[in-house]
Amino acid sequence: MESITECEVNLFSEILPSMDEINQLALSVNSSESDRLSFGEQVEGNLSKTSPANCLASGIGLYILGRNEEAAEKLEKADDCKEKHFYLASAQRKLQRYDDAIVSLDKAGSSGGDPLMVATEKASTYRHASNFETAEKVLKSCANFKNVSAEYHYQIGRIQESSGLYSEAMDNYKTAIELSPEHQKALFHLAYRCDMSGDEEAAMDYYRQITSSAPVYVSALLNLAILYEDGGKFEKAAQYIDKVLEFHPNHPKATLFRKDIESSKTMFYDEEKEMKITRKVQILETPISDFELSVRSRNCLQKMNITTIGDLLNITETELLSYKNFGETSLKEIKAILDPKGMHLGMAVEEKQMSFSSSDILDQGIEGEETEDEGILSKPVDELQLSVRARKCLQRLNIRSFGDLTRRTEAELLGCKNFGVTSLNEIKKAITSFGLSFRSLD
Image (tube, rainbow, N blue to C red):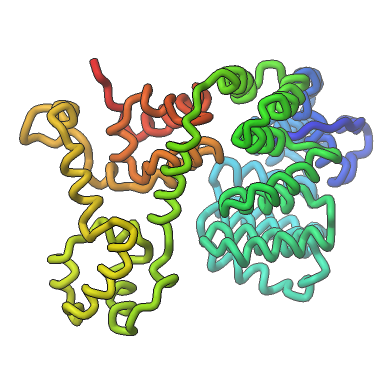
């Protein structure tokens, strides 16, 4: 996440600044394009100096600039100290050299590094490597910091969030904020999770807390602007985008988003139609556990991994009845849930078959040959790791898989409320990496 702040720290002074000061310097450097260019020139001017002390400062400077490969090479040439090993580990983690990063963090601990910082950085490294179990074990070793350290609870929250334990993650983010009200990373992730769970008011409140103090994260400004735009408050959204552009005039997302906001002001919006779509999505996402079912029916559905109303629409009566222990009685229970909503088993399957027109067949190439990997097309769109705004647009359009997405045209996506060029380009770039594209009418 980028940030906006002001700080005066000389990385190349005779005495190396403290790690807290260096972290503040990093925030300052990335606070604006001009600061980044100025700091880049300062680092370049010191790269030719080869003393161990200068290699340490230059290596840290290169890491701050995001030049991680160069940073790692420079830091290797510095004398051993906790600062060298901490920043070397950070650069190695960015380069996805996770085993090397763990080794560097062990050396940081041996060089007098703070034990809690070593533990949290290790946990973060294992989390980035998707080794959540080991990350959890590392943090358990310093459980005495429970209800004491905000960073400890933040890191636990990140592991839980990565594992899909969203409610538990939010509890730990809240604890982190109680211990350190200005812990901006905890605030940001709590705001994001509130947004994802549909609690937009809470999300906006947390984002505003971030933007009201320094450092101010660009990501928080962008997400807050998205929420204001979703609520139709275009002028307010524009204010936050303008704040980003004030410091980052060439910021690509902010520049496109600003144009989208202007377009949204004149965009036709069928509120009634949108409400119907939203209501349908809500019904489809209703968990089966909300309904009173017999133990047999509940167990059968659970074993078949059917958890929502939408899942029921994707399976036929025949398929259900073919499952062991699922009989006519259970079938009647399921129908009693769907009938009042004007829905029936296999409904989604039927709709997909009807929508699979000749133009869709042409898109797949020569008849009888598959030009797309079915495994890829069945992947959920969550794997694209899109921004909040793009995800919401896909939810409104009930696009759940890569296949659903590739059957849409660019015009169809742009017709969705608040779906602009920024989101379109983001999704297009994401699916292109998988060798996919939108449907063309040409």
